[in-house]
Length: 302
Ligand SMILES: Cc1cc2nc3c(=O)[nH]c(=O)nc-3n(C[C@H](O)[C@H](O)[C@H](O)COP(=O)(O)OP(=O)(O)OC[C@H]3O[C@@H](n4cnc5c(N)ncnc54)[C@H](O)[C@@H]3O)c2cc1C
Image 1 (tube, rainbow, N blue to C red):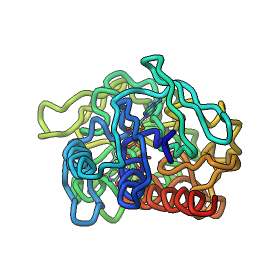
Image 2: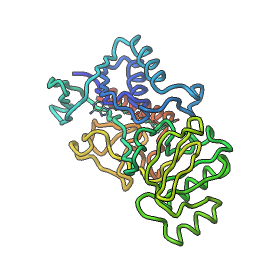
Image 3: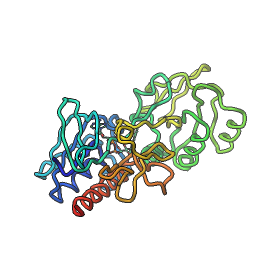
């Protein structure tokens, strides 16, 4: 029986395990190897690690965790989580079962991209969604925005002062006249034709060829306005956790969910005072530390 099983070893789970290990709380950290920024070559907006490859960040964190005797890491997926005898039993993909007094869910979310041929292959390399993470690298250069007008409007508002020319491409159906007028008023060019495919550009280094029925043009990168988020793992549903309108797990200041003993941290959870998950490496790590403190408070109280 561990004090805590942390499911997920992205920034949220790695930080939760570090804090628990430093407080000598027996901790099992599980990792199925599916990271939200798994294709990203360089992460940004991470103090002291700006530009670091995410894989290097995770490897360093794991190497440092190896010094903590109370932290065990297993590269195996968890399949199910259920309450058992005042704690939790977790069934793993290798059919073994492990138990803990607390669980920290840090399994993150996955991005369901619009069905644009070639987009998945460029995701995290030349196709992005977060202006804070990848806007500055496109300073002064032309970019494309793919997808829904309301989110495109939001992206133009944030990226307009950073990048060069912005072209908005509808996905599926053309923008309405009102949407076109609104996007043009913000200073964007608007493609009358929906995007039909994207591919690595042959003429712009690291850039993207955006094709429509009318032809194609090259930009330095594209930002996707129509990605949908999906929980990477089924544990919120299995445990009947309360969700917010955003679809995220509701947590309090210390990562407590609606189910006693179950904590959550990272992209899959946020407090009700926020409009949605503030998805970033720093925020996920901070949430992981808060959840670990919540676990330690609970362990100390019993
Ligand atoms: C294209 C892209 C670029 C980004 N760039 C940046 C950037 O530059 N800077 C920045 O700050 N943020 C960036 N982000 C956001 C950042 O990646 C996330 O906010 C961050 O990774 C969230 O951390 P997390 O720990 O919540 O989840 P994740 O990092 O997604 O980690 C989830 C963990 O859960 C594990 N897991 C899932 N299911 C199971 C299971 N059943 N059993 C066991 N383990 C499981 C996974 O293997 C993984 O270890 C980017 C995101 C995207 C999509």
